[in-house]
Image 1 (cartoon, rainbow, N blue to C red):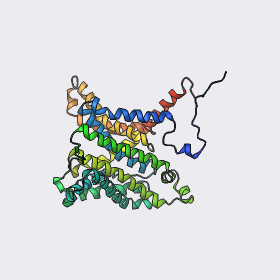
Image 2: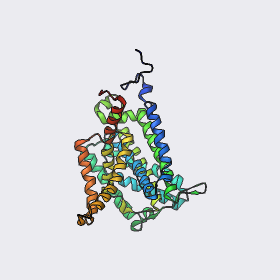
Image 3: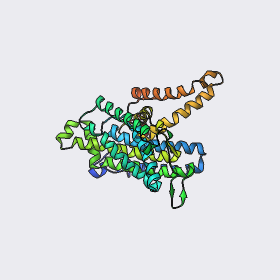
Image 4: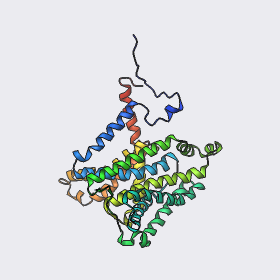
Length: 353
């Protein structure tokens, strides 16, 4: 008995073209376009609250993507992603207010400006690593926080800055339903750029630096160049996300970009999966939705246990910290690893291997 077009039961790649393909098979291609189609109809199906949560997932996902390129793919550590996120927000608002450049352009310019700042603070990465690099990026966080508080010409100081609503050819993104599509556009662009970067020579160099920097250097990879470049790319995505956040809220305040926010970005990529583009979005969705779930759970239990309403804010923060610890212990490869196991199970079903 012969079987026509037998279904492959493994991951067979016979050339470099197959190894660098954006979508490994038709299932991945179809899945991407199905998800994109579902994303396009979200504002028509769900209410404003759900749309606002999707906007936050998209914005934070862009910034977390940059951090994952730095931490997950290059092996560098950063505790200052929130500061670069804030720099992008302030840069876009400042450019639009003082130069009159349209917001749709200042969002991109803010990403470029944040790239320059990130590469400056990434210079220590050329000489230090591990705990020392973490302390250096922590210093960058506090330096930029102090800069935001003092540079009134740039940030407005304690009063903050106003951010105009984006507009394109007379179409104003003045509602959550409209702004959602602007964020969706940047999410698609950012994740496609990152996916293509990882398929390129530079992306493979990042991974080589992460896996074994001595071997990478012997192979001719310039460690200084790629370490600083990874900080620049990470800051670029943080700047884009920050600019989108500033114009979404219409107001940018220096108090928003604290070290706790940087820890949240780290939590997103740890829970989603270090070194995974898709895992970044899964982790971001988990962190954004977890406080909402805990609020719902507290509401259910507040009847028999009334004091839970008084400690609800602490429960939300404790839930995020607990989630990080649980994933580090029981699922260190993140949600994307669990998804791959589920996908492999159904792909090979009814066989176990």
